[in-house]
Length: 206
Image (tube, rainbow, N blue to C red):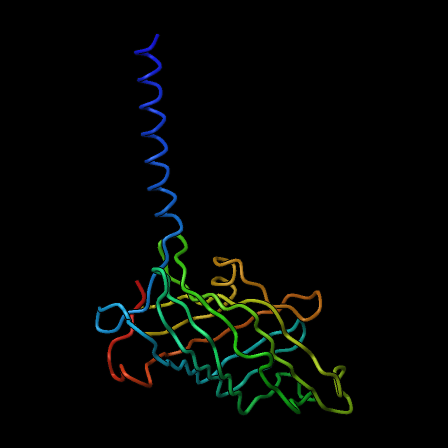
């Protein structure tokens, strides 16, 4: 009986140890790297899309220049970031009678972190808030300030050094952007590079 109990206890401890390894692997997060070396300290990176859009049901708002600046670092084996600036330029809608009178990012900085989902690396952004004021006498939203809020998840591609945001990447990361209770879609591909100590070095996430 004692021998059987000892065997059962040993098996239980072994299972717990294996479970711990599996759990650790499941929550493992990627880190920021330059030329294959993990980032030490901080760096500023900028993602710049030549075109990016947010779609409210019935109307798409596109900005020809959509940028974001992030202060990045690695902490406790996790890549993190603080989005400090989001300039938006040359924005318009796909509805002829609706114009974009004003658009701006609010409540900066937005926090971000890297995460791995199903073997792919993503940047997950929290605290997103963008306000858009539409104009146009015949526009249903004319004179209305629309506030986009929530989270965003973008797929990181090391080969092209880009972050891509779309419905697929949002679904994978569980990210959601809404106007009130209505979900919206954000699309954009952002080539990203360093602008401080690691200029022209290959930026990767792993």
